[in-house]
Amino acid sequence: MSSVGIKGYAYCLNHAPELGLHYGSTPFTEREAKGDSDFLKALPKYIQTYEKAMQYAPNQAYIGGISYEEFEAAQTPWIKNYLSDANRYGRYGEIMPEDEFLGLLAICDVFDLIWLEKDFAGNVKARLLKDPVMTESIVARLKGAHDLPEIEAEIRDKKGRALYSDGKVVGCVRNGHEIDDCLFAYVLLENLACKAGGVLALLHLMKNSNVKPEEIDFVIECSEEGAGDMNQRAGGNFAKAVAEIAGCVNASGCDVRGFCAGPVNAIIAGASQVAAGARKNCVILAGGAVPKLFMNSRDHVKKELPALEDCLGNFALLLVPDDGTEKNPVIRLDALGKHSVGAGSAPQAITSALIHDPLSAQGLTFSDVDKFAAELQIPEITLPAGAGDVPHANIKMTAALAVMKKAIEKSGMDDFIKKHGVIGFAHTQGHIPSGVPFIGIACDHIRAGTMKRVMIIGKGSLFLARLTNLADGGSFLIEPSKGGASTGAVSKEDVKSLILEALSEIAGRLN
Amino acid sequence: MDLQNQQRIKDAAEKFGADCIVILGSSDAEGAEIYAETVSNGDPTYAGPLAGVPLGLPVYHVFDQTIRDECDSSAWEEQISMMEMVLDPEALAAAVKGIRDQYSQNVL
Image (cartoon, rainbow over all chains, first blue to last red; front, top):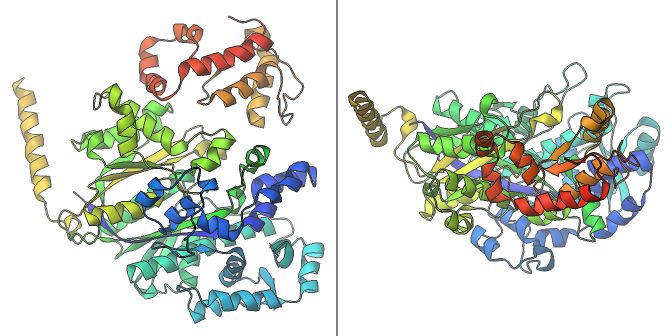
């Protein structure tokens, strides 16, 4: 069996409510279509401060500020039970305040697109230097500070988009082209924000994994953004752009796309390259999506609830050859779930393809998996918007399928759901909640011996692009290493499985 | 209901008239009611092509017994039975029936 080690992981959030107010797709389209509507007037009243976002239990679970068990035990509703002892930094990453994130945007800009006001730039530069993952050479990239009148003229006369802090204009994103809408200021902001989130995750990943930038061999980026111009609309390449800022001089990279199934597909692609020996190691990462900020805020405002979609999510993983030790849990490449073209689009067909089929092909059953992690959106965001508790719906479907496959009794569904499900703690950032936020938690538990097997499941709504009516999905298992399988050696399990296969073939002939 | 789907239903109703029925697969009763109202009495959010357009279409949830009786049982088993265990079929069918009784014409 081929397997690849997971050496490290990082998960960060960028608190970005003012970017959301102006450039989240829901408020943005409302403003473009209706001007200053009642919804837009009301929305600022429902926005959380940075402190509240930091104290919100799901956010702390995401950055590893609290353990998954502490998150499970946290008092609900979380919006009424903020954590009093929360910190900016957790074991996986951080929640970065918005002003510093604007500084990081400028750091990640190599085309003079982000202009920040002089005093603001100086202030955030000093604060960024205090971040444990920022080096002086990275922060020194923050250049191009401008006077406010110059910035205002760029917005007023040249189609720049304003950047705000505390309600005031503190900078702008310059327009990249007069006619080519791939290079309009809005799109460039979206792409630079995604790049900046990826950089932050990569910096935390290298710190968490104790790896130097020059040791990184290859990077695969798997967000849902498209960088290009009108001749190659989403030509890429976020991965290499991120690696450049993080100082990974020996790395190259490419992007993998698949809507919310992007990360699982990228992880399988990266793991396969490492298992084949084509790459010494591979980072899989993604930044967040500005348009998805406050995506469901219309419903939150209507129901007078906090507009919680105020953070960009990002993550990074480091895949290395399986060294056969307990140090690095592994991704199995012989038990991949695939939602094929012919599988159909019924939830039953998808759940079978992604969960039952890869398990049964390996002689495993539902209860052999400690946790199934799919679509981990925070339910306090999705429930008021009428989208239900998405992770709960997923584990309910898994339990129902287990009943149909006679793996559990119908009366045992509730216990199965409680034992094998995961509570959602990821922002509604599309590709971010799709299973991957649980990889860090799973690896920590596997190392500690408190979990033996976890399934990560990604699902993507391909039909949104109007190319096909199909959806997509993928899954893989994470387990403890069984002895350096990626070196090409034949393991005990391989021999056992070959003997079983041969015996069942003989038995079939005798019948 | 998104604007594209509203337009598709409006176009189909114009083309096929009284031969049209709408079958919903929504997993949420509140959402099912809004979709049902959109295709029978018009878009209650006044955002899409069906705003102020009461098509009066007969609308059913796929879990409604009338629809279930029309389905091939093996296809039902293969495609839908799992979701019967996950969702609340009776509540969903009843939610859509409530709207159908108020606004739909030519019911089955």
